[in-house]
Length: 361
Image (cartoon, rainbow, N blue to C red):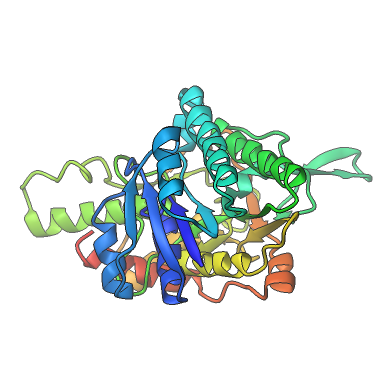
């Protein structure tokens, strides 16, 4: 198939592009490079032997976007593009609604005009908000840890980033209802970690990272730099990463830290290929992509220390508002309908992260 990957030089997008190219698909990439780097294209070529055509275009620029679709007929779109910093979305909500929602509407307009009728959308478990269930014994609502696709969405979402994902899901459902020839697969990610096993491709965001593993990487680099360079000044990108902040150690979990479902990015990328092959006209399919298992933050630290042989400095910080003690996917629908399940472990992800780190990142 001829596929357009929006946000294709980003973390999850680039790993999926590699899987698509290796599976024989013809892929072109559209990205504004706001949170990714152009050299990712060289890494993709090194891993696949192929050089995808690249468009530096922002989805909010409809005229430029439409030109891309006029120049090439695409069979399907993989939609990864979007702002994703939760904290920033709280302080700059209009930026997130405009970029994520308006950008997606523009994309769907261009797809409709140019008869492109398949989309795989990069969504998030944040659409579940703070899920609860009613305990008939205690007559109270209790937090729900195991999340499946039958749960309601859009309720108690704690940040504008999550709300944009929910809104886009609803827009896709409405578009499929309006256009019977259109089909959409919505993939709800849990906590992607890891990097390509080659060490060439990985999570390397511009600016201050928000996800756990890039922060672990920068703390590790900070520690190594101080050891190897003694009194030399730290590079700016790692100078404030002296330790890993663990937000709360008094949750009702076995070790007191939050438990999340961490999925290797390569498993996640492979899930996208499975979703592409299951698209049907007039249908919206929704899948959780997770392992179905939880790992605590303290366990993440221990696994990193085991794999790296280094002690990771940590500090206990106050709980963050809205953080649940435990949350993990019920991924049985993806296994039953797509034949997909996560095969790689957290330790695999940590090993591949260290390869990327040791490769100069």
